[in-house]
Every structure is written in structure tokens, then in C-alpha cells.
Length: 157
Image (cartoon, rainbow, N blue to C red; front, side, top):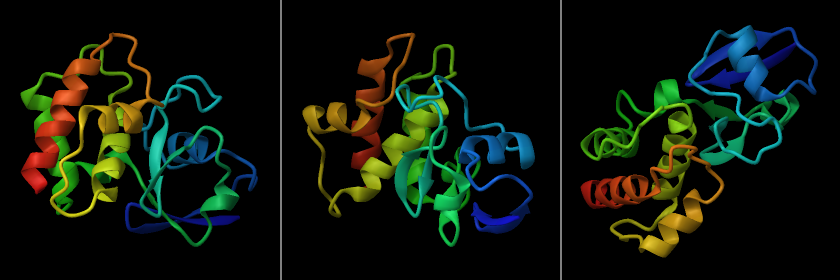
């Protein structure tokens, strides 16, 4: 048995401690917003936050999350999360999603990146590209992603 804190709620899961967070979220807790892409931490579709840091949940075992806060796409873009709300609004404004499969991971990476910036700092295109480099978009919406992150940074400044 492991205890996980997900989106501010405590859950007890009866899975092997080596089970990746992704499968505990999807299969055990029924939270399907986090996607499986490659299973090797190469595509970013499975990105969640662990104590505010973007991590690849497909390779991170639930044992690594004990005593830490997991935030998923279900909580990152709603409620009182100012940055997540700004990112979500910018994604819609720039019509970022095409097929949409990678978007939860893209949004989670963008949100963690923007939260890591000093207050009021506007990221350069190169900084955005670097922060988002671990997320693959098969549809190639990278220019729209960059524009959305730029707009979200302005909205939270």
C-alpha cells in the first residue's frame, strides 16, 4: 500500500511501489488526463508535476512520490491556479491543439516552466523552446505553443 497526494487529495493505492506514477493515476485512480506516449520519458505526453517540478510519470515510480504532491492536468488548468488558467486560455487563443494527444503534457511543462520564472520575467523564444524541448508534438504545432507560452507569461506578469 502506498499513499499518494494527488491534486490536493490523499489516495491509498494497492500497487507495487515500483509502479510508474502514470499507471497509478490512470489505472488505479481513473485519472486519464495524463497520457501514455512512449514509456521511455522521451515524448512528454505523461508529464505531471511532483512538488511543482515537471516529471515524466511513465518512468517515475510511485515510491518517489511518497510524501510529495502530484499535480495532474485535471487540477493544473482550473480553479485557483493563476498560471495554469493563463496557459489554458493562451492555448485556446492560439488554437494550439490539433490532434490534442500531447497537449496535457505540453500544458504541464509550460505551466511548470512559467512558475519557475522570476516574477515579471518574460521568457525569450529560445528559453521557451529549451523548456518545451522534451515534449513532442506529432502535429508540429511548435510555433503556436511558443506563442501561447509567450502570451501566458504576459498574462501572469
